[in-house]
Length: 108
Image (cartoon, rainbow, N blue to C red; front, side):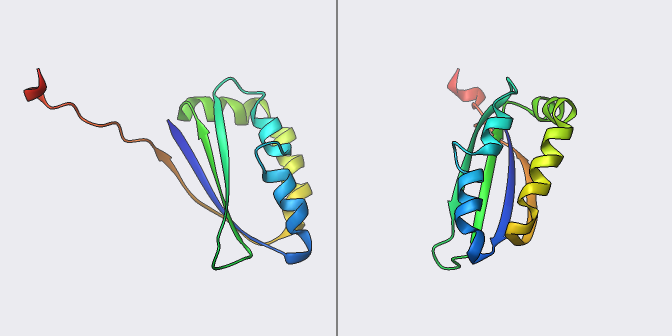
């Protein structure tokens, strides 16, 4: 599985807009769902820094995400521009691959 994690510092006056568009039923998820390789998104809210949010997007693979970006680039950029004024800061924390547990040779 492929994970993309973003951090946002959301302006207080746009918190409702932000959470609506980035939630599990929001515009981003609706766009991502057009891709067969999309699995899901988590929206997390920091309880000590009230303006801080994280999203974790899950994809079947790096290739699935890359194919989505190629096929949906115009829609992606349009939605990104729509949301850009709602945050003080937006940072990609990274792209990660899930680590599968290793099966010991001794198990067989």
